[in-house]
Structures are given as C-alpha cells and as structure tokens.
View 1 (tube, helix red, strand yellow):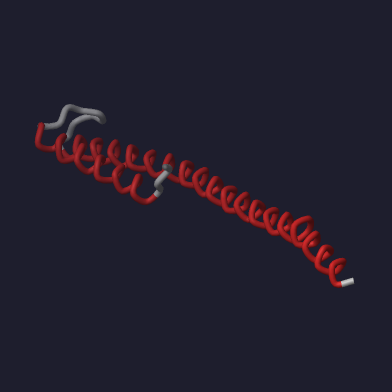
View 2 (cartoon, rainbow, N blue to C red):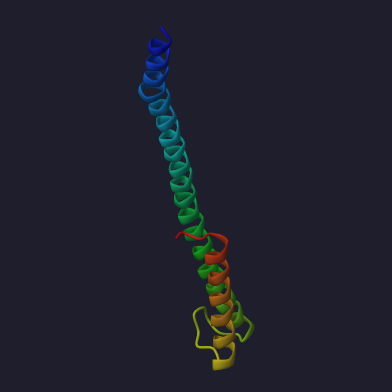
Length: 103
C-alpha cells in the first residue's frame, strides 16, 4: 500500500505538478514579452511625434529669425544663427531618443 502511495505521489509530481508549473512560467514569460513589445510600439510612436515636434520647432525658429531680419520664410541665415538653430534641433532630437528608447 505504501508503495502505491509513493508511486502515485511521484506520478502526480512528474505528470501534473511539474508540467503545470512550466506552463505557468511560460505564460508569465509570454505576458512579459507582450508588455515589452507594447512598450516598444508606444515608444516608437512617441519618438516619431517627438522628432516631428523637434523639426517643427526648428522650422518655426528659423522662420522667426528670418522675420526678425525682415526677410521671407526659409531665408539664408548667418552661419552663427544657422549653427545655433541646428544645435538646438540636434539637442531636441537627442532628448527624444533618451525619452523614448526603442532598442
């Protein structure tokens, strides 16, 4: 009788308990991967919005400097102004990449 109980207990452990434990572990890993994938998709979308905003701010600032000089939009600015504006856009884009990593 004792041998039957030991055999049934061992069979339960290997046939039911361990596989169920593995399925629970696999299910948890799938859920974690799905959450990571959703975060990457969201970050990619927010990154694109942020980069677009940086480009828009760049264009608006450029046109604003043209207007201050009494020139039309998309004018040629002095190198110092153009470089400063370009640097601001680069910093804005760098911030976007820091805020919304996609790797």
